[in-house]
Image (cartoon, rainbow, N blue to C red; front, side):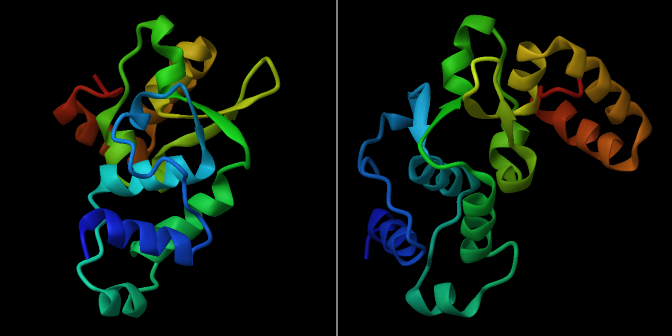
Length: 160
């Protein structure tokens, strides 16, 4: 099976299959479906299924099925705004949020218009500047924040 076929199979088994899984340009969309976000997240994490047996044998929180399950729990149904929808803010996405455990690092936030968005910390801070100060304080004072700051410093993310 090809890489795309393996991902499609895993998404179908989990009950999630985005209609545009074969479209290589959907990642630039400002609005995506839950399934599209799950598929994009798996790709950005580099989570590929080497074989069907491996997919069936690993059900932990860091496994493919664990990541899909967590994303299904966190993401709302319907169309979801993404970081791509906020380019007008001239904020740069945090590579760490998108690729290092995005099922934990990315956030679903409520927007002023009543819709929801799936965004990284940098986009959230650009949307809500008051949260930026809170986030910076957390980076400086908490052990987890200090560790994230060190990680982000390496990729130009929010800890700089």
